[in-house]
Length: 169
Ligand code: FEO
Image (cartoon, rainbow, N blue to C red; front, side):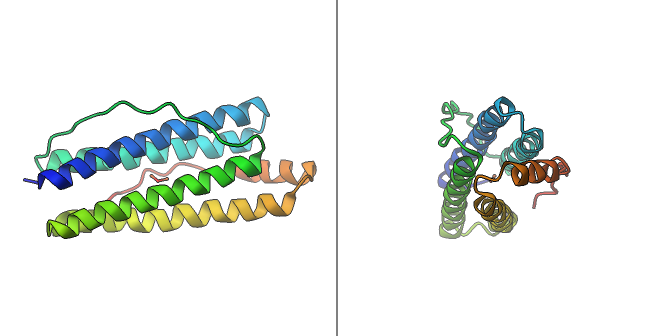
């Protein structure tokens, strides 16, 4: 069994992870328009990661005998009209997700659910990685500035990113 308040917080976070999947899908469309295929690949991997994050919580809630309550996914709004601006939005979004994961851990702590805290440790570490990856990319994009050739080299690098199904928990 799982505490109702924690169940609600998990359901809310499942929605936020699936919204993240949707947001990155919308960002991918922008890069498709610019024909930056490496970035498109980067977002493809990101979309799959967010799906895995959402499903990790979905499966966990089921395992704990909680009620899964799927909610409407908000229409994603992509802020920014350049790769740099879009990645500023990605970082801002990941920082927001980190704050929500921390909130979820606060609730788990409040209801003294050690098993959930153990699971959430994985998500907390994942957020550190997510922010570091995006922060690194953002720094590179700032360095690139208006240099189109350098942007194309970065695009080539990003084509190599592959999705690895995470083992959550
Ligand atoms: Fe699921 Fe990018 O955090």
